[in-house]
Length: 282
Image (cartoon, rainbow, N blue to C red):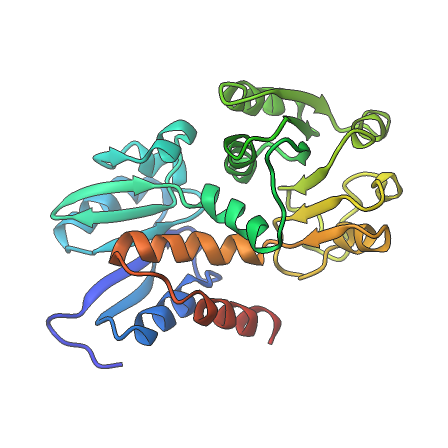
């Protein structure tokens, strides 16, 4: 990599951030298109996020990805919000336009594109989503934006689920349920797509999210976890003849759309996908 006074700087801000796969993915994307830019991780403690936002302006850093725990706070600090970012109150991409910070949320379209890649259409479908965290807000908004018939939100913490349900209910038909096997059994009988947005399944000793024998045969099951590539939920769904999708596509496309926002050029998606697969799965 050849650096000069013309080299533009991009990065990712988060806490922690050492595990981020964005630096190798975005660096390779810049290199493949001959763009004179570097992409580096910036570890920013929560209490320093306001200073970090001002630092983007002061240092003329051209753009950053934003990850946990800063997505909501950075939305309050930028000068402009895209429609998706404003609705969700969360930003995962910032572009510096002559000192003015523009905030976007590419998690939404990233999730939708990951399904389209697999031939899955959302319009008119009945969706049951597990979880009510930040990822659930983006994913739930995405399926409603794409025309889902209705969205069921199932969450262990019912009051947290209701908060997310009230927000997403502004965009479509949303019902919220507690995480109980009896309730899940009833819901899944009338579901076309199951989506897991929780962290359950990342560790081998995680207890099941619910009784996986309740998964209907032949539906679509999505788990936004990308490591491991096949969680116990997806493994059980595959045995039921379901179409299964993990979170690699969402990770890829949110980054690809960020690249396009920053550069105005089509992202080298195949290059970026290869980097992620090598980093994650060897």
